[in-house]
Length: 403
Image (cartoon, rainbow, N blue to C red; front, side, top):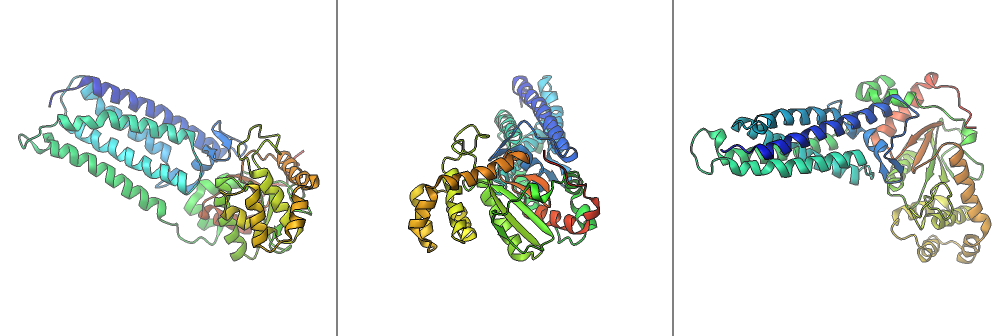
């Protein structure tokens, strides 16, 4: 196999870029875990939210941040590319490099799928790492063709070995990453159980400042659950936000199965037509959908209408809003009058102003007994938060004054 120093040098350079990006990703993840007030540059609200992805349980593998695994992988790749970059012949190094780069691509594909379909968020840092890995694979994969095409010499010098290493790395990473992603942690019952499963989340959660409930709620806000519930979740949400739909299914299940939980809904549509804090038309139907939900609330059918809106999130134009009202048996004439009443949109803006006062910048933003969490959580994190609230009330700081 002839040496190819140019290709190896490019692979080495890409690996070093990967080290830098992974190291910065680790820095952001570490700040998120240790500084409750930190917001990264790539938390743009809505779908683009690195913080939600890096803080999720998928941000670690075997209790080690994925970014650390990335640093180790890119450093190893740089070392394996170094002999070829110096013009040396090393079939073993190339074979290992092919397997490593293929495994990186496989795991990156798994994480991309999780971020897209499970967390419903785009992570700019993660996508940058994905792009680096793709470039790395495109650079390194042709090395397989430089191995001997026939069975001559040691096995590791044959092209069959190169293709086998490439396929094995890809398949093992996809399989391992998928198993790790779908495996649910065991049921936790106590604070010690939660800490043993995800100490990072516990430390992060307990450092969150606590706001007083009266700064988060309004007597007119829709509430699901009893007034004596020990845990109150206030959700600032947008009916057109994909991550909010993800949160909707989880919060609906919590309200149904946890008698000590009540959910309070507040509007925070991400559209400049009613929300001056947004500054652009991000979700063009969100403001009208929020007003329609307020009209359903006046008719005493908020939660049913709320569910229909999230279940039909791709159809929130005016005609569809009336269709949903008819399906629920609402008085369509009264609904129309309400929807066009300036007081209805004023009510939506009142929620927006309340959200601005307590630091809402993206949706969904949840306040669990006053602790602010940005983005939809994964199911274990909801369960862990509830356990912490039930068993660690003495650790909570005094409520902060948002003013």
